Image (cartoon, rainbow, N blue to C red; front, side, top):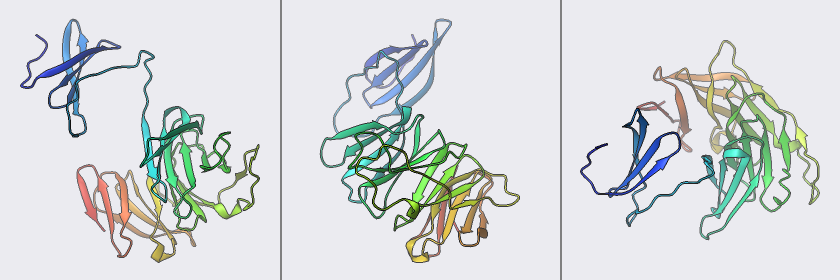
Length: 281
């Protein structure tokens, strides 16, 4: 006997590398690995709690693994823009079953940001260290409106201001890059055949800080988007003034890495999340 359970099991399926998966009545998937003819439970998780019963499993014989790293709604909520493996970006209709996929980068797309001013514009960032700006009305040739120079580090997060003037990019390096989008010509040709490159407007590198920044964002519109705030793997929350390139506030509520934070749109409050903790600054 491999294992005893309290629920009814519907399916079992062998996987590559001596793996086994089972599906139970309560929508629980259990993964086992066989070592010396013995199966050991390695992990389990529950499928989304939707109406109905899941009764079947299947796997791809190509052995492909597909993952999605970042998802955003467009400004008009008409589409979801999803960054995934292999450099692909998927645009999915939110109210109607449509999907368009195109190759945007050479490596995995880890960051997606949709414009807060134009429902057709979005930004993508990749492990290859580049960010690209796209218009969903002209994606047939997979040619972006513009492309940044390589940062040398994997792009992990992108944010833009409310006017499409600036874009802030977080990478796995110890810097934050702010790009001036106004440098892009307003009247681009309908079918541009070359990539338009532009350089960083500002690079934030705090002195004596050897930390990886997480999810740098613009401060709320009521502040004029003057500040950039982010968490770090050292447990800090930093607030930078982009006019002076200086730290104006620094918080440390815990010693665990702060993976994300959110500035209240109408109040002087920043919420941060880390492993097992939610804090307010």
